[in-house]
Each structure stands twice: as structure tokens, then as C-alpha cells.
Image 1 (tube, rainbow, N blue to C red):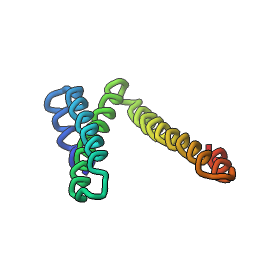
Image 2 (image 1 turned 90 degrees about the horizontal axis):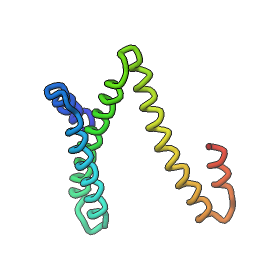
Image 3 (image 1 turned 30 degrees about the vertical axis):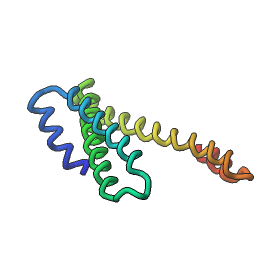
Amino acid sequence: MLLLWMLPTGHLIRRTGYYKWILLIGVQLYVLGEGLMIRFRPPDHSIGWMIFTQIFIAFGDSSFTCVEEVAVLAAGSHNDSAAMLAFLSLFGYYGGANIYLKKLKTFGKKKSGGDELLECVQVAA
């Protein structure tokens, strides 16, 4: 789904030359999808509603991904494009891993009586 929406997004950026408005629409779709997922999370709702929210999230996320890559590539020269995309990926993955690591540390302190899980998390960090 990500690739299928990135192609029209890239085409729109190429046709118009602007990408900020695509970002604004993509962020709104992403937030709408996440909000609806919270609403349709209880088990009494159909699985179709969850699929519907995942489609909104996929459209918003792919728009955001395409626009952030274009913005990073527009900031530098052609010779540095590979390094800029590598840094974008590195900090994106590291930031996400850091958030989950902090959550896992607090979970380890709350749920386990022993410190085995906490020691594993500290070794991984």
C-alpha cells in the first residue's frame, strides 16, 4: 500500500513543484486514521473498520515519507544524496528504537519482581 500511494504522491510533487500541501494533507490523514483506530479498537466493532483506519494511516504515512525524502534531498547537492538519505533513515530508526526502549524499561520495573528483564534492556542499550 505504501508504494502504491507514493507513486501518485511523487507525480503530484513533480507536476506542481510544491510538497508542503501534500505533507499537510498526509499528516491529517495519519492523525485521522490513528484517532479512528482508537475509536474502533473495542472487540464489538467489525474488523472492516480496522482495515479502513489502516488504509488512512498508510496513505498518510506514505505521503509523509515521500515528502520528507524530497525535502532532505532538496537541501543538499546531488553528490551527498546517498549520505543524506542514510542519515534520515538512521535517525528515524534510532528515534523509534529509543522510544520503545524507554517503554520497555518502565514495563520491566512495574511488572517483574526480579531484575532479569531490566538487565537485558540495559545490556541492549
